Length: 177
Image (tube, rainbow, N blue to C red):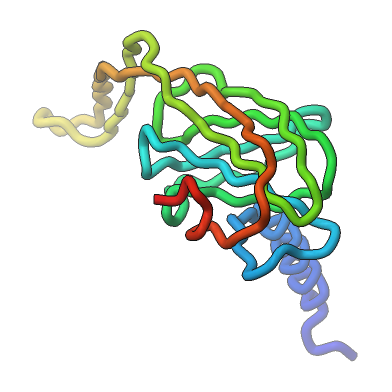
């Protein structure tokens, strides 16, 4: 008889959580040499060096990279199978109402640079709401709601896909800082 009859439930749960986390995980790649059957795209922006990227493929809609932390050295390198792709780019640490979109051509063993530009847009107001529940000075339970308004600049993302270049590490590419 199995001493832990629910052990298989825990094991299956851990496998599901592991697969879910692996499906959400994306990372910037920087191999020493180009891999066989793979091409690369380098996304970079000289307007703002510390950007948190959100890159998605269109048709089919697929999350390629999503991280609230800025990428190392300002260049995001993603691996693709050779072919044509339509991608959208937004930034998680900027107010971007609509992502930029561009078509890129990926060639095996080469790097397609994609330069992003942040173009100032309109001013926006970001509303926040904080609710606090607890006792009052009168000894009764109470609730307060505080609404805040903060001004923010919005940006439009313009993307420019450049012709593919010979593979080099990110640090050695001509647009690296």
